[in-house]
Image (cartoon, rainbow, N blue to C red):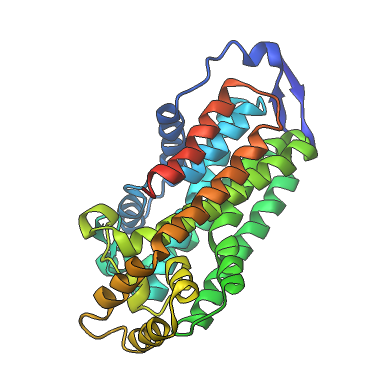
Length: 335
């Protein structure tokens, strides 16, 4: 019923795997969520409380990609569960640590972990999640996958450091794209290629890596657009937070490119005075005037198209339709 895959991992044969109906995205998210919950148990009551709080909410997009692609590669579902859970833990750990760095007050429509429990607890719970993720990856049985996830986690830290170093400066577009590749898209990419890595199909892994990378870039640029367009009740944090913190994202970069000299001067001045009341509203008005948000949304569409192109070059199974839906969701959240 099973055959040995890459690095001693177990892959389900085609005949056996077809006995299992393709799971829905909701079922995949639920399996990943249950795997996370089953893996973070501890006899430290305070840790249990902070973990439960930190893990609440979230769409589990990275976990969904990992689970879908692992299932596509005919991994046993329990292995898909563990990989998806490990990736979700890494993502949440990164968010918790980011909120400490940013001194954020909200996350996912509630007080951030650091605001609720203090910075020391938030830092330690992030460390706890990273270590538990490593334990789950050991169970998956692929040293190659562990190495790739270690690289992605390292890139996450590098991306955040690039963002921190550039806060308050008008960095170039290439610096921004490099930053979001590291801090966001790298984990999307390894989530997508995880299953193919475990079974040792490097050609498929390369294609799914590109799918995940482009989907991740689309996700982050779309998120940066929402910061300029969304309402607090929609995005779970104050609109304009990135602007106030001195983070220059794709919408603002597009505005600088499209603006005339007068508008550019105004944008530079507003950015210098970004913490003053009304600065964000005036900057957003200029972005709308020059069509910067439309151009940024077009960038999202371009990255989604590149992601979908990779799906056209792999064998078609029911899972591919779900991956198309995931890519299209990047567009839907950006309209």
